[in-house]
Image (cartoon, rainbow, N blue to C red):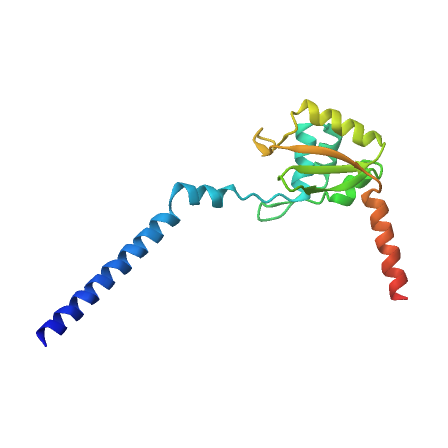
Length: 169
C-alpha cells in the first residue's frame, strides 16, 4: 500500500512539474523577441493615410493643402480626416483607380491608362525610391508600384451605381 501511495505522489509531483515547465515555456515563447517583432510588424494603413503620405513623399503641396483643408479638430483634441478617396479621384481629374497590396506585400497604386496622373506619379515614385514616408520622414511603405488600368475609380463607381439602380427597379 505504501508503494502505491509513493508512486501516486511521485506521479502527481512529476505532472505538476511538467505542467509548470510547459506554462513557463509558453510564457517565455510568447515574450520572445521573435514573437514580439511579429506582432509589432503588423501595420494597418487607411487609404487616407496613404494619400497623405503621397502628398508628403512626392512633395505635392497642392494635395497636402487639399488634405489639410478637410481636417477638423474635435473638442477632445482628435483630428478628423475628411479627405477621402472620392476627393483624391476628383483631385486627379478622375484618373485615380484604386490601390491594393499585391502577393509580395507591395503597395500598388492604380491610375487610368495613358493619364497624366499615372505619368506624374511614376516619375515621383522613382524619385522617392518607391517608398512612402510619413510627415516625420519615417517609411510607411517600403515598396510602391504605379500601375495603369483600364477604368478609373470614378468610372467603376458610376457603373456600380448603374447596376444597383437597374437591379432595384
